[in-house]
Length: 159
Image: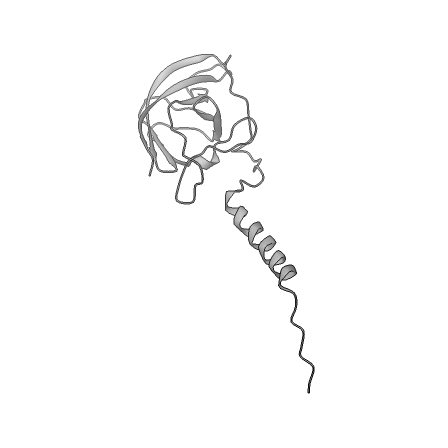
């Protein structure tokens, strides 16, 4: 009579399978490393920045996107767009009549945390867009100093 084959013990296999599954299940919740580039460099909000006027630039939030158009007669040089006095992203400028369509996940705070924009795979409730400011120098201004200009948030539509 042939000797029966021994099957592997299920405990080590089960432990390995659970460890592998646990590692892959936590990946979607990870934020990953902060992308430190020209656009998303973390920065502290400049509370002492010189305040400019509130500009007639309307800001619309549509899901995970932030859309705005410069309807003023003033163009702005390179600067930084701030959301809720915490999250920011650099922009190359905002010319007269120019529109921007920005991903809210590209906005980071001083610690490198990303704006919770929501979306289909979001695990946390999305943040509201309450205040948007542009830290830039108007192109028609001969001074070198940037100012903090308020923008008008018209819609905060979260999908």
